[in-house]
Amino acid sequence: MIVHVSTLTQTRELGEMIGAACLPGDVICLGGELGTGKTTLAQAIAYGAGVSENEYVTSPTFAIMHEYLGRIPVYHMDLYRLGSSDDVLELGLEEYMHRNGLTVIEWFDRAEEVIPDSRLTISLSHAGENGRRLALESAERRWLGIIDAVARRFHG
Image (cartoon, one colour):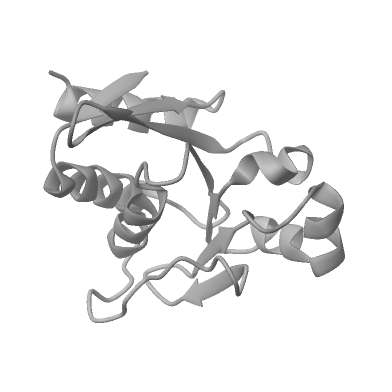
């Protein structure tokens, strides 16, 4: 499903809507070129999952992973500096994907082989000067319902 957002506020609303629907064990993968809004979307998803707005959710580019407490724990990973799935396995990061929290992964394509198939994948790209195009996809029935709700809310 393709969704277009034209403002930062819409991106945040979309992310918070997704985060509010997340359950323990969910994995969300964010892809797209540099500067397309992956971290902004990850922040909004975390806030939607109950992370306090007083806590600044930052990109874990150098730390690889940050953990936040919300309604459910949020494990925010950035795999940009990793070379392969072997790096993810060596660091033990795949274990977080099977815990009772929400795992949000930027640059997931660096380790796609170890990420559960039950994930929601969101690919971001530029659409005009300030807009973004988000392609949401999953094979899971529950995610398909969430994707449908997001598409209804942000269509047009």
